[in-house]
Image (cartoon, rainbow, N blue to C red):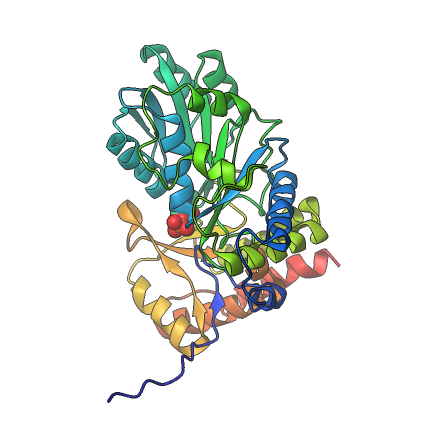
Length: 394
Ligand SMILES: *Cc1c(COP(=O)(O)O)cnc(C)c1O
């Protein structure tokens, strides 16, 4: 008989597009014993998760919960509970994840008006206004807040106002943004929103925090046809997370322990402080990257602090650089997706991974590898420029 060795995974510094490193307190929380999913003690944990998510999403929405599944399950839940077959929806595609929204909406039988903008830019409200004028009865406008494939932050408020002027719901993907930059669900008039546990929130993958308002719930209860997915139907899932506590599916108990601890740490740090931390380390990293003569892919002013896209210089094999970072330094970064494959690196500074040690270590490793591969720049300039940002903030 084969004998299997006990699982041993390497320690990594996670500086890709997620998952990010997890604080030890979160891992500790997850090692506690599973208890019953209807045990009053567990229901208390769920109530805590709901209340903390309301604080982090900045919403009063009663239907705020964590879907059992990754961010993509959150996407499928938000779209699926709003869209009925035949509905006209406008989907803004500025990268890989906007594209995924279109694929889902089409499977749900929506008539999709797809808006495109160049990967690496954000949508202007005028573009969405023009589409809203053309569509007869727009049911929803859907957009990605932080496009992880391009490193671009999409301003939301004007587009939200426009969607509502035309009577459409405003749906937002906050998978990468939540916990790293401001996300204000009620103040910005977001009707349905979803995120994921493993990006800036600081827990392992497996849960999709989300929130919908009463307008969405009202439409949900007045649907002509039930939601396409039984598992993701919020009218059913909501009876488990709500006061009814009706069994729907077994909650992933230990994952919810982890999320509770991660959310607690987010609130302990404070949202404002957390956003400032993400911005600070982003500035240091960008100073370093630019001092090395490299170019950021996203325009200044629209850059995500938690996901930095850097253009690969001519003659450098981007995958080989990533391989060496992983093998020699145990650092994970990512390459480009879709149209940006081979053209950019994606360097994440998400949640627990967003810190000075990671920025300085990464730049040192990156400099060493690029120099060895023949890319010429002012040696040490990257590290010095990042250090200057830190010293100036002392
Ligand atoms: C990661 C990501 C998703 C998908 O989340 P999974 O947890 O991988 O299912 C969706 N949207 C955005 C913007 C993301 O970055």
